[in-house]
Image (cartoon, rainbow, N blue to C red):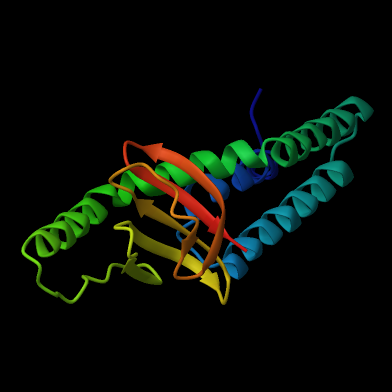
Length: 180
């Protein structure tokens, strides 16, 4: 059975939200990400409308509708797992650079000298009095998200952006944090 262009676009648009969530969740700002998801939703609706208007059999229309409903339902119910996976992907991509930054900061601490903290492509890189290195990824005022390096694996309870409400382990000594 040969697929039409519209059928291929429909299948692509059904998996597009998953691709956006996994690879772009931490790499873009929230408005761009929501724009991706909105575009994806419009694309699904547009492709389904074309398919439903052009296909003659009742069963195909029903199958397309069911496939879309299942895909959207799975996406909405698995969003927490998708976000966790997106965080792991983001961390694995940037771990090397963040580790280099931590090494530079730790070396300066041992030598008891001040340095200018290397800034990566994040909102901010800071250190806390208790020794944690805080990489703020995104946020505003007191609602931020980031990755922290904690030598003693302790939650400091706060960051430069406010009180920590979530502290999830990513790897040895590395944690994802959220504030409110």
